Image (tube, rainbow, N blue to C red; front, side, top):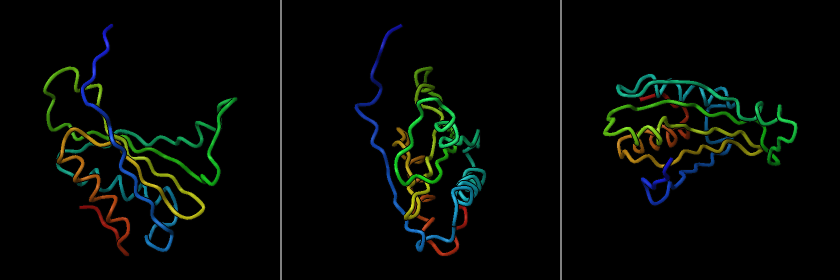
Amino acid sequence: MKQTVLQESFPVYVLEIGREETPFDSVDGVCGYFRACIEAHPSAVFIAEFDHLRHTRSLPDGRVGEGIRAAKNLVFCFGITLPNPQALAMRPRSIGIAETDDGFVITFIESPMPVANAAMEDWALRLRQTEAAPA
C-alpha cells in the first residue's frame, strides 16, 4: 500500500449558533433541517445519520468533551464527478452537528468541489434565519 497526499490540508468550517439565533431547539431538529437540504439538492444523496455521542459513550474508554449534550453526523454525497479511484478517499461528505450548553456547533471539512462547499456553507448559515427552509 502506498500513501499519497491529494490535498495540502483540509480546512474545517465551523459555525457556532446561539439558541436564540435559530428556530431549532435540538440536534434532531437541526439534523432534520440538513437532511431536507440534502434531499432537495439535485446532486446530493443522503446516506446515514450517525449518533457520535451515543457511540462514544458506549465505548469502555469513550470520552466526551464538557458541555456536549448531543453530537451527530449526517453522511451524504454530492457525487457530481468521479474523476479517478483516488477521489473515493475524500467521499462521502459529513456535516457534524453538536448541541452544547449555549447552542449548536456546525462543522464540516472543506470539499475539493467549490459547489459542495457553497451548498454546505449556505445550508449552515441559513440555520440563523427565523424560519430556516431547505434550498
